[in-house]
Image 1 (tube, one colour):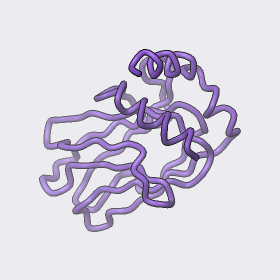
Image 2 (cartoon, helix red, strand yellow):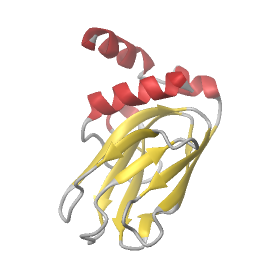
Image 3 (cartoon, rainbow, N blue to C red):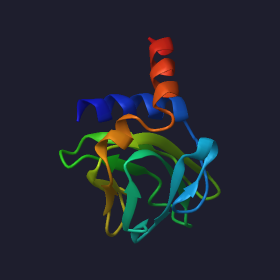
Length: 143
C-alpha cells in the first residue's frame, strides 16, 4: 500500500487539473478516465468500477453550491487524491495509479457523501502501468 500512496501523491502533484472524458474512455496519454459529477445528493455515479493501473478522475459540478470537493480515500481513510473548489462552471481532476481494492469516493456536504470505487484486475498492472516509467522519472526529477 505505501507504493500506492507515494505514486498517488506524486501523480496528484504532477497532474493538477488533468483529464476529461467519459467513464472508461481514454483521456490524455491513453489513461482511462472516470467522470464524477458533484451533486447535492452526492457523487454521481455513487458506485463506480475501474481496472488497476493509471486512472484519471474527472470532476465536474452538477449545479450544486454546497458540494465542491471530491476525495478518493483508502479503506483506512487516507486521502489518495482530491479536487477542491469545483464550483458551477469549473471542472478538474486528478490522475493516480491504483491497485485492486475498494476505495471511498467522498463528496463532503452532500446528502449521501460516500460512494465506492471498486478497482479490479492485476496488481502488477498498477505498479507497471503505461506511465509508470514517466512517473518514476518525474518523481526522481522533482526530488
